[in-house]
Image (cartoon, rainbow, N blue to C red; front, top):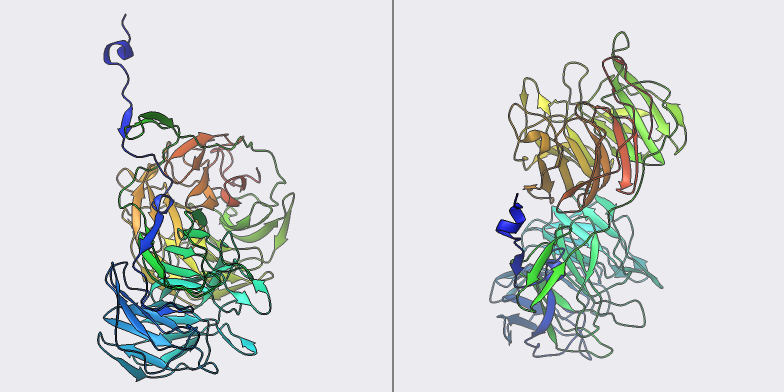
Length: 600
């Protein structure tokens, strides 16, 4: 009998360009129109675009008030600032901008507003300083950090279009941090310098109320050019001290990735635009410069797929893309002290907490909690409200955690905070539900989906350390869902159950603003264990009808890898990465209605 392949042959995809990991991975720098006056420590309307922005203030051989507008090709001189300064900060767009702070002969608090033709002095900052980070618009701006000798500040101030209001400080005081954000409610700050010589790679995310430390940049530095939003930003150049840098990194809301470098190592530039189209102008390469470099990433691109074979028609070559799949295995760990399933969990592989759960009759809904140290479990203070949660949730660490929602019964919105020794009831979820998922920390979490009897919900809520606020709904209502991610701005909502398909295999990606459906898991099932890894490199384990399957997510597709020894549903699971995870408890069969103590 003839083979189908002999009759039909094989089809290989033809592409005009090579596949890339992300939009930013395909980005590159090109020369743009130079400033009319070379200068460093330039402020800018950084929410402007690559073809329409302003560059103002700075230092030539003296302090200047110069203001220039860019049209995508060339700069034109416009009306000057009222107060000449450098190391000032800026926000907004070319027709509506803001300039604040800076240095004249000392740090100043002056704020000026641009209406498209002239600058007007408006209300001052609360704290005079210079070398601050900045983000936002002319009516919703954020400034943070800065310096006014001899003090380095962590101060954060918010502009509402009329006045500045002090908010919660950065976790680390610093000068010359980078910043990105569409408005004052969602900002990411990165890098910076604490005098006399400490450079930072640290990244902090702001939710409108407080700052949370997230993943660091690859290269510690200060200054440079930064633009974009808090889930998609670019950091270009900067300095490590004596030397300027050309290094450029892209932020996807979870991790930093090195991308194409600047053509010229540079520091203290003005900046504007998005992670797809931005620019930096002026700065110092050792002496002041007027150069502009424009960053452009492809609007459309071919995403890398695991094991993909394609023909590049431009270079006339066959190409193959491969990803390394971890060759890890599961092994037995120390058993929990108390059986249970439908558990809350938080932490990492070697420092995890299991709380609550269901122990079958006559135990019922549990309030006990235990901590895992990588080899054994130790009893902790019980939670205040005995409950379970299909799919599990929990945020934070073994010293600062959070659990929320669940079934007592009835379904509840109760939230409890863990401080390393005891549980405290705090503000409830807006919508009581069970079967919900969550990611984040004890001060910045995201809770999503679930069942608010008798229906399923798409509701999503964010936690700022004191209260829950409803944010953008997911696309498909379901319960028994699992969350993957370490921060509240980048997460996956995977699997689950609902009255209609395709929920059991469905996966949605959260970028801090919106939910997008992505590739489905290979084996759809609810009540799996995860929160291991990130939204671009994660793991799901077991679940459903006591599956042993383990699947790895690489940011674009799911691959089945090493199975667990014991298939179960309603288990707990934790891991900071996809290569170091722990799974515990769960129900293995109808003969163990109380669940198991097994740890892998």
